[in-house]
Length: 96
Image 1: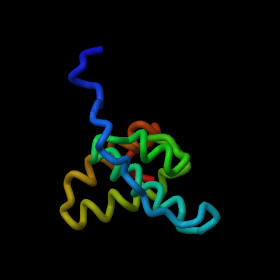
Image 2: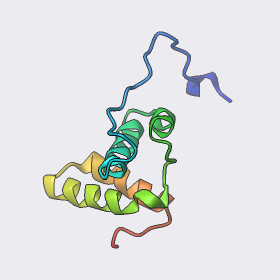
Image 3: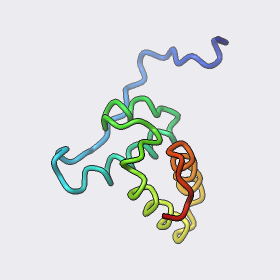
């Protein structure tokens, strides 16, 4: 693998994700947002470790569909793009 793609900066802190208790009814929504945020920062793995969900996990599809709808309404193109990528990884189309 090319060294250009290896993260070597040990001084760079691992991203922190503010998540509710896993038993909270809002946990999946927060986890979906964390995965989108991690992907936007180029560090999906940290978000996966923090949430215990993998990118494209079908359990989060309803939350990501809502994120996509809100992003499109608000004109947040990058969030919408990442939500579409998540849905594609989950084997889901953009419509429920």
